[in-house]
Image 1 (spheres, rainbow, N blue to C red):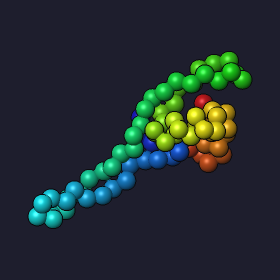
Image 2: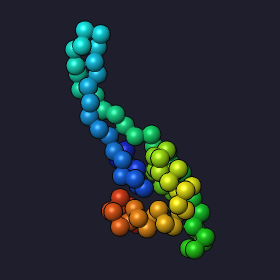
Image 3: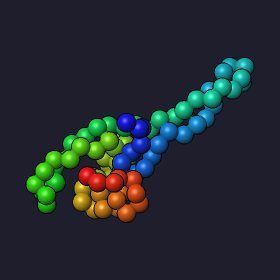
Image 4: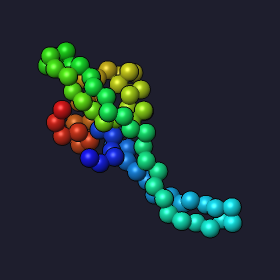
Length: 80
């Protein structure tokens, strides 16, 4: 399974490791992902999402159904 947030669409970005002598080698910065279960009262079922820490905060702020609707419109989540 890929390391992409299903709510915000965050994924790994490429950067450099910089040593003391300023020699640069490629590396990846991964998002802070968690697998979390949420209860959907409208459909009376549990869903499992792979979301970032900022995605969890977004769900706490806006609510689960609103965030899932936005993520589906943007194409981050196919079906939940």
